[in-house]
Structures are given as structure tokens and as C-alpha cells.
Amino acid sequence: MSNPDFINQGFEQARYALTNIIGMTNAQLQPKTLPRSLKQRASGRLSQLETIVRRLLYLMALMLGLPERQVSRQTYPRQLPEGAEIVSFPAQRRFALSAKKVAVATGALPQKMPFRDGQPIPAAPFLARLAALYHVLKDPDTHAKRLAHAIARQREKGEPAPHVLPLASSFRLRPELGIVSAALPGMIRARLQDAWNTS
Image (cartoon, rainbow, N blue to C red; front, top):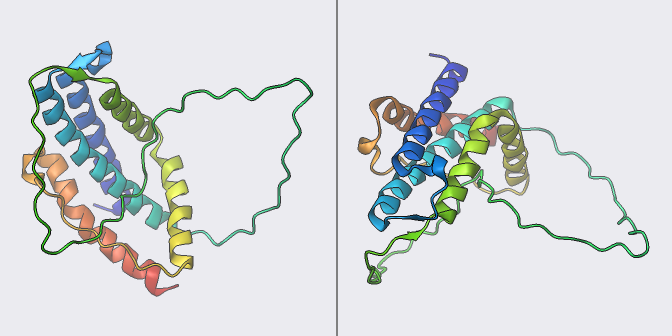
């Protein structure tokens, strides 16, 4: 299977997994609250899926080729008409295309988890994460192009190539999505080696 076919299959499996999470939580009904145990289980699955989608986008961005640096044009702020006011609207949650940088700490003591009662918890933050991921899966090409520019900027700054580790708890995924998850780290590392060595 070629890389484009692999990526297309990966996104198909990701959409299927997202549909399962939506059905599991009845997110299509826009609930106000979720049982804590259900929300924790669904959040764990969603976190895995978000990581897989980020890696698919990263591989896709590397396959597009890193664009050359473009000189930004100087822009000047526009003057508002007299009497006009700026109105701000609440921003929708955005899906982070790149994973957070994590510093490896040695000898760190595990933190004590706070006590949790069994009360339902607000569903809005979880539903926002679902909507953000759904938006990305509708149009992965646009997001991959944005990510390609971000990778190019990282390389120009002399930052080291990111290190991609195997996904934890991938054995809990459906077999088809598990295969995608297991193959992604090696495929990304091979592409990163080519991209960073040619810089």
C-alpha cells in the first residue's frame, strides 16, 4: 500500500472511530452533562484518536514537501470609521495540529490524584473537542498544508526533528486503527530523516 492510500485509509478509520465516540456519548443530542465514568472512558479514546490524526496530518504534511520561506509583506492597521466599535465573539476550540513539547523528567514523584465524586460533569469541553476533530477530518488537506508551513519554520529555526514514540495503549484500538497507529511512527521517522537531512 502506498503512502497516500495508507493516509486515506487512516483518515477513514479515524472518522469511523470518531463516529463511535459520538454514539457512545450521545454527543449528537448535545447533552449538558455526562456521567464522570463515561466521560473519562470517552476522553481516553478521544485522546488516542487525536494523537493518531495529528500523526496522519504530520505524515501528510511531510509528503507535501516543506515549502520555501516566503518574505512576509508589511501590513498597516486599518483605521476604523468614526463611531465604530470592535465586537469580540467567543472563539471556537481549535484542534492543535502539533503535539505539545514534553520535557522528560527523571526521578519525579507521582502526583496524588484529587478525590472525585460521582456527580455528572459538564459536557461542553468534551463536545468542543469532538467538534474540533470533526472539523479537521472534514478537510485534512487544508490542515496538512498549514502544518507543512509550521514544520518548515521549525526546520529553518534549527530545531531538532521531533521524536515520535509508539502510541500507549494502542492494543485497545480496533485492529484496523491499531495497524495505522503502529505503522505511523516508523513512516514519520523515515520522512523526517529525509526532510531534516536535506536542510
